[in-house]
Image (tube, rainbow, N blue to C red):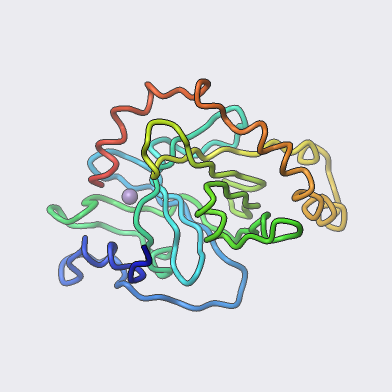
Length: 217
Ligand code: MN
């Protein structure tokens, strides 16, 4: 089911009308970036995007992302966006897809925590597997976050964005200790996977109405 990169992004937009970036794959050899855009569309939501394979893998989050590990945010996967979108803020004209104001809410670099041994998963592979773990280095969001695909109720696009609790975060640490901590993460993964949100504990009701709006914006 391999599709042309950014085909869906292109299809939804008229670039003669919208100021959004054109559909182009970009290459970079620096650290991968993430961006969160506050999008005042028909309903306010936050677009969470991670760079991978020259595009921005994207999720629409109906509520402001939270740094509280107890808070799980629904994150609906949407079409890949061009890398240049990370710099986009402005007004999508009335009548266009996602019409409304886009502001950059947070931006920074990230580290794919599953890239290290023993998992060695690229971000794209992690998305395929429904379990992403990243270390964000942004202004508002920093530390480890997980995106976990919900397995219940059919929809493959429904994920949860969760702050991963990190005991070490409360301690003041120098950079070498910080690196050691990050390296140690993959070894703990099976345990964490076992603690993944169980279907029955998910607050399903809360999300029901928001999904409909999200797919349009
Ligand atoms: Mn959006």
